[in-house]
Image (cartoon, rainbow, N blue to C red; front, side, top):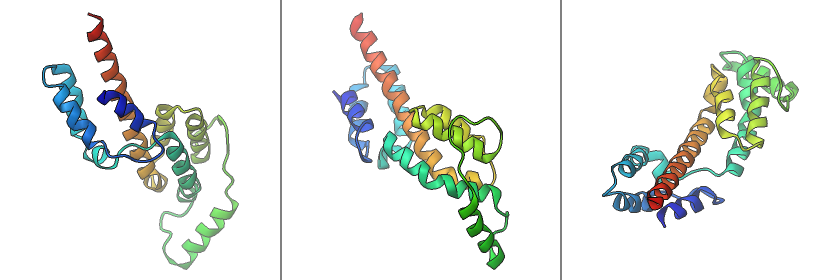
Length: 172
């Protein structure tokens, strides 16, 4: 039952803390070393337990919010303090055009376009790999999104592993 609740949370439209489900899983896994190891993985991620998991719509929306900011950070001056840095960033914000689709190349713009392409295809893992290949100031802008995506991916993988293990044990 707890695994079904976890699936409901993963598919919900808002962040729901996972603490009650983790407590139930701890109780459920007392006699199963493999399940205990999975539950311990959850227990070691305080942020995930306290805040919950972002759904796909939220990840997409959050990515859209930081996409342009990451472009500006990637192409802007490393020191954007002062009046000239602020003006330059404002101009970049207006003139930089986001590429879209599966674009070849190693630029920040093409990398973000591929990440968005994967994200729109609900492929979090590939989107995250693209975003993690970005470094420098743009990476800093994307850090909160990367954390949300990693938490969702982590929770989905643990949920799948839990369901598979329970299913296989019930087949024996």
